[in-house]
Image (tube, rainbow, N blue to C red):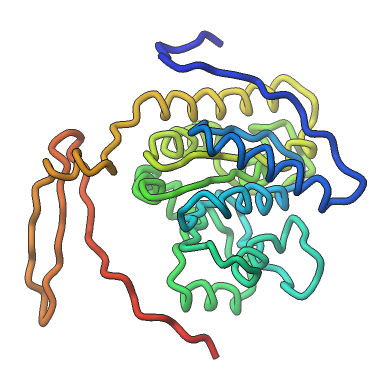
Length: 276
């Protein structure tokens, strides 16, 4: 593939070898990512199992901000928080383990039959956002706003339709190649997304179809970064058009960017939620 019109410096930082224990690997990845984040580097991580996203998340512990995490995955990955961390329980660990830096979690592409109803109810109670695979496929652009305030993102390649990866042993349904590339581009466009991980790549066959699609996902993420408009900066927000709409006893406040035509809805900080 050809390089786009990209005024960016790109660097391959090499490989992090697996440690003697998973915790050793988490530590090495976390320290490497934390150092890069301090240098305002945007990171693209090519990983093995998705529990490495926990180390990606912990790299933000001293970054001075709460984390909004967007996960493209057929499963919520809440798991059993009392059990050791794994590729299908790492999100639960983010929620319950200190320091509590997870401000918001969004799942894109979940498939209902892979997630217990209790988990669906819990995410609703926590006011986390979830988007079913079918809903997203009908209107892919609806997930673009999800990335606007995201800090980090990840894509589980099991969320991709296996026919597009030449991987017959993976899940039956998922995003097609065009859809997953569009999602990757939306992630790149997110002004505050400073890291994105592609996980479970070790489950893919070493073939042209799988390798090419992964490369195109990377390409579209980078292109999205190039076309960022920095609309979360104070200077850009000064030029927003503000609309206030009375609804019942409340007043909803909307903002429209004159640069891109995108809209925002102002959401007051909710009161602390107690889960019984």
